[in-house]
Length: 262
Image (cartoon, rainbow, N blue to C red; front, side):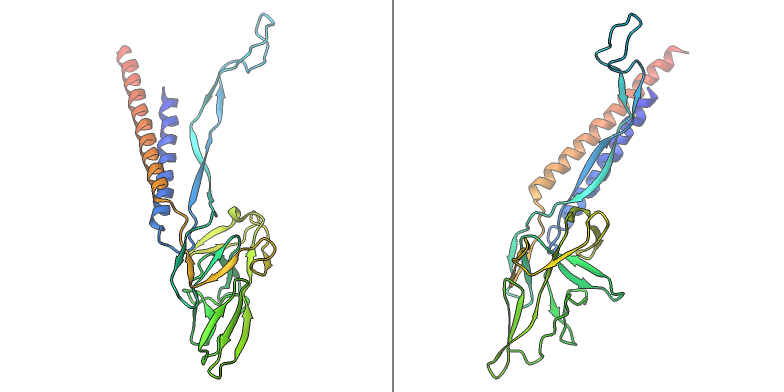
C-alpha cells in the first residue's frame, strides 16, 4: 500500500513540472522567435514479484506472462519544437524573419557565439548591426551613418543607398544550422548555445544548403498555439487530480487495514 502512495506522488510531481513548462510556453506567446518546449515522460523501474515471462513453472510449463509493477513516472527531458512561427509585419528597416531553417549568429562580449531566431536588429552608436541586447551580428556588419535607405535581400545581402544616389553593398548576412537543433541549450534572452548533442554549427548563405531565406520588415512570432497549450493545461490539471484521488484512496485502504489490527 505504501508503494502506491509513492508511485502516485511521482505522478503529481511530473504533472506539476508539466504545468510549469506549459506556463513558460504561454508566458512567451509574444516573444519574437520563441520556440515552444514539450516534455517527454518516462516510466520508472519495475519490481518483479514473481517469475519472469517465459520462465519455467514448477511443473516445467512456460509462464506466458510475468508480474511487473511499475514505480511511477518522471520527466525524462524537454525538447524544443522548431516549427515555423507566424511572420509578423513590422516595417522595421532592420527587422528580419527567417522563413525556413537556420539561426542568426551573434557574439557575446567574451567572444563566444550564440544563436537566435529573433531578428529584431538595430544599429548602435558605432554603426554596427546589433540585436536588442547590443550583441553584434556575426559576421560583423556596419551601416554608414549617412545611409538614406537599407535593403536586405532574401539571400542576406545588405545594400545601402547613399545621399549621392549610389548603392553600395556593405555586407552579407549568414545563417547557421545544426544537425540536431533540439539539442541546443536554451540560454534565455531568445538565445541558444551549442552543445555536444546539437553538433557543430554549419554556416551558409540564406536560401542555400537547406537554410531558410531572410525577409526584411518582418519578425517571426512564437510558434505557441494558445488552444493547444490550454488543452494541455487542462490535461495536466486532470491528471494531477486523478493522482491526488489515488493517494486518498490508498490512504483510506491503509487506514482500513490499520483499523483491523486494533
